[in-house]
Image (cartoon, rainbow, N blue to C red; front, side, top):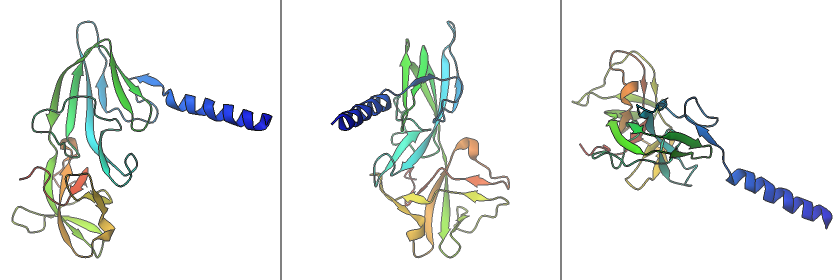
Length: 209
């Protein structure tokens, strides 16, 4: 009985510690988070905090893709034209007070002693691509559908978004070459012969163009 009671108390203590996630002040890179580019506040000037929209594929919500902002849940109002957001969209939040990150997964951003006073956004670049089943690669496509020649490597997720409800599928499940739409964060764009990093892949153009 004593061993059982000790086990129960130890379990309760562990759960209590897990639920009381530490709040870390943004200014460096808190453990387990990727807070993007930040600057602190002073009495005279507000701070800024920049994050990039990124997908969690099934870890947060089994079977569904969840949009996170670096590793955090949404903590600001999306600007007009960015709801829903696209992977690779970059948001700069201007705030007063102190910005903290609760170190959970997904993490939570908390602003104390102030408020969000503005959000600006830079849209991801949308690029048509072809997934090549034989060699499991991507080929960028010109506006007329011909292949684009680039000089660097192409980095891309293992999954693509299939609809607007958050469903996704593995590229490896495709059985024939397929045209998709990739999104590239503006700060990751290339188009000068360099490497390409896709933040997300979509079955249809996520901007509806």
